[in-house]
Image (cartoon, rainbow, N blue to C red; front, side, top):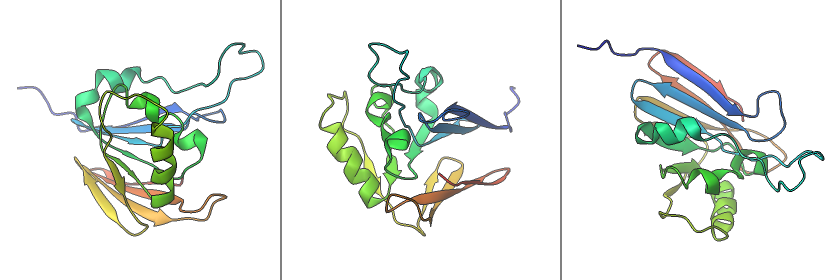
Length: 162
């Protein structure tokens, strides 16, 4: 009998030591959640490149484990990669009203294989996604309707400020 993996994996697929492409992945056992999915704009030396998105290879290989995408706010560096992610997986997406409104508009510009499940949440609400519990916490930011996330895992709580 195979030993159950009881490690919490935290992977930053974009936004670490760079501006843009904010995307974090939490994995425990057979459950993955994604926090934000942004894009970046190319540097001057990236001729012919319009947008830079995170590397979705790990997500594509583990698509059956993805339980949800949780969004902190509506800036492009946090949500701009969503239409590109939805070409590989189609999990429920959770965000506040303004954030989802921006995404809905953005998705009209893309032809996707499946209709995305956009779920509106408010600060104070919690969502269960596999072994994870995600609570949305109001924060002030330069865009309205921003939230931080308190993510309850089997090994403790992680706060993601967005």
